Amino acid sequence: MGSTERKIFLGTLALLLLVAALYAYQTLAATREVDVYGVSVILCRNGDNFEKGFNSAALEYNADVHIVTVSDPSPAAQTAALERELKNGADAVILYRADAAELAAWLARNNPAAPLVLAGEETLSGKGASGVTLDVAAEAAALVSEIEKQPLRSAVLADGGGGEARLGALRAALDGAGFTYETTGVNDAERLSPGVYVALDPAAALSLSEKWSEGALIYALGYDAPLRNALESGRIAAIALASEFDAGYLAMAEAVARIDGARPADIRLEAFIARSDNMYEPPVSTILFPIG
Image (cartoon, rainbow, N blue to C red; front, side, top):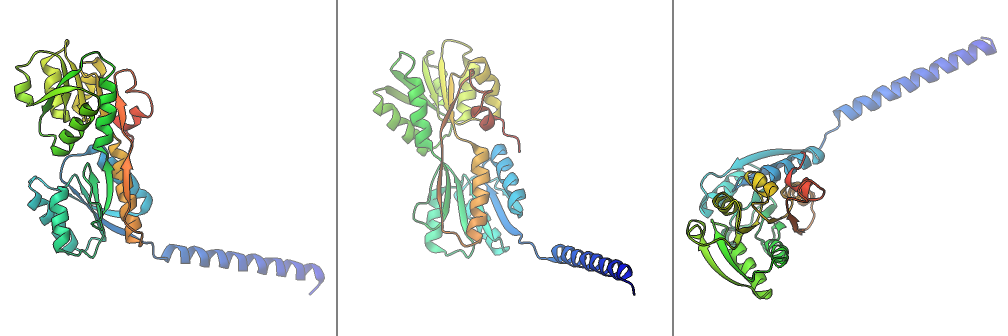
């Protein structure tokens, strides 16, 4: 074999070996096991943006998500759903807006094999569960700072079922700012004259905004999609909120981290104020209208 033929032969052989090596690598990569995380998400209340958030994270972290919607709002129904998901072999369980006191009592009696992540306005400090908290105290403080921009120093707290955590946080913030206030149910608020109203929840805010198109200053803790028109038109002066999308994303990321052996984390989300003049500008626009 001449030198030219030898060079051609060796070059062809090298090329064939390279092709064989690439084929072997691709075959190995295709057959290699990919970790799939089985995460159950128990929704104790509706949360479209929260759902967008955890679905986005699930794609990134390769999580197989099983969603359970608890139609019965009782704490017992929430823990019953948790027990079913654990029995069915979930690698981790996220609970959205579950009753923290009931869950803490359940954890005192049980030692779940899978990590738990509680997402919402209540925490489980020191109970071994992770927390992604929509910090209602921070939201209340931000909202009262916004209310202080107008001259009146008295307010009506309209409660449509917002819960003790929201009521306590608002009272503390208003007391600290020197406001006087009274608390009433949202239906009873309708008999009162226009003034400064602080709605403890989106439903109460919507009800008040429908009663008064002008004359009342309405502020709200928490956002829901039906409030969009009232906020845009100025019938609602301001809304304190945190990113539900971020809460969902971070809850899923925390669940995967816990499955991989990380210690429980307590994550608190920043509070923002939405008004008609900033609702279509970042960061508020990305909180109100996340793309996921």
